[in-house]
Amino acid sequence: MFGFRHIADNRHVIHWGRDESVLADLPPPGVVMISFLDRSRRLCDGLARRELLTVGGLSLVGLGLPELLRHRQSLWADQPGRGSGFGNANSVVLIYLQGSPSHIDLWDPKPEAPAEIRGEFRPIATRAPGIELGEVLPKLAEQAQHYSLVRSIGVDPKGLRNHGAAIYMLMTGHSPTNFSPTGLAVPPSREDLPSVGANIGRYRPANRGRFGYVAVGGAVKEGRVTGVGQAAGLHGAAFDPYTMYDDATKPLQPLGFTLPRDMTLDRIRSRVDLRTAIDAHRDGLAASQASFDQYYDQALSLIQTRRAALAFGLDAESTKTRQRYGMTRFGQSLLLARRLVEAETRFVQVTWPAGSDSEPVPGPDGSWDTHRNNFPMLRDHRCPVFDQSLSAFIEDMATRGLLERTLVLAVGEFGRSPKIGSPTTNNVGPGGRDHWPECYSFLVAGGGVRPGCVYGQSDRHGGWPKTDPVHPYDLVSTIYHAIGVAPDTEYHDTLNRPRRLVESGQPILGLF
Image 1 (spheres, rainbow, N blue to C red):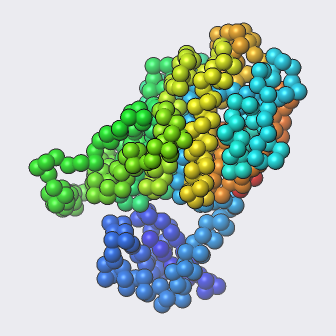
Image 2 (image 1 turned 90 degrees about the vertical axis):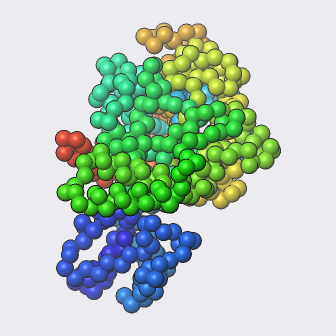
Image 3 (image 1 turned 120 degrees about the vertical axis):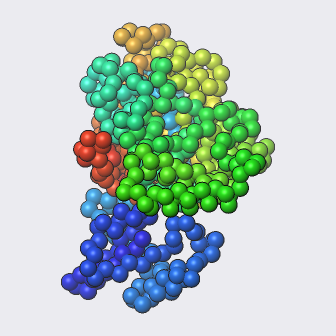
């Protein structure tokens, strides 16, 4: 809706949103509400007579449509604390490297450090002047002009050094208060706080017939628990991700996009109309019922619009393109992510297929959790797959013009210890690196982020941030900021307590 109201200096204030709740912010007296495009109809499907009158009537208030859209953008940018980059992205692709690769060996080489810290890999130059990567990422070095690195993210774990707690912080922007003292995860429940993807699906909803939140590649796993920090929790099932964890090197069979043989769209619409008529005579709906209705509406719109389902047809891509990404689960999942962005999906999470604390094994799908044999595992197995696939994705997104409006992040839940083979309680063996949440790195690209830069520095051993320290909550706030959702947005939990989307922190405005 757009809302206009006159104020003392005879200017107009514009309120923009897709939700009827925006009306709550507008005073009833003297308000003229102008509806631009009913939610049930997209521009390319044609306009109703009332909508045509509405669009044509914009000039009656002295503001044409181009000026209106420009003014909306200026209002977003002028909001306190928003600043540069707010709302630049239409989509987010979060590439989650569960198990966590060593930041020193990939993103933040330390060639001057002692041998037991710098490790076996030498730094190599990149296409971005002054930026070096570990020698195991030669293809990503050739794409460095398209992305930036943050080398100063870290957190004091306060005893929670295990994967589950760090995953929960990254995926929800909140402290893992429901974890054991050692950081072990508990099964997800509807009492959990919503994931970043679920919040974006709610507060920046996708267009009708498009996905809001899709998770591909592999499930997030910590120990025996699957789905840590992934679901919508308190928001309800309507905002859970659509998951596709099948091996993308094989034909994918997404469920839920076809109707039974004896069912037609007209019959479904008639059932929806009947349900609406019945509900209109009730005093109200329970929260679970409302959530189901919203989920039902989303499912129906996806069936009606085939574009979203067609994104899973990887066989439509050329052999050359598929091979460029790599015929691995991770590579083809990134190709699927590009296709989902093209299909206007709002939030895509691509998760590395091995569990966060799985024992590293040879092959393309093994874990990053290199408590032992860190260097042969990275050199021979993990990095060749990662380097080929992520470089192809970044290059493809840039070539197709998708990177400008898509925020891309590649990050693990923490880093790895600077000192190699140091015996700890986490069972570090010969040539291994331990968990290290105190300092690590992540890659960020697109969505208005300045490319070819490094934000922040770690100390000479890669153990602690030296300049511009960043908290994981700052990273989460940056995602919301780029997609156009205020990180301090509040909702209420089941006890009616106010909750912020992010517990604390601010967007990293220096990236934009």
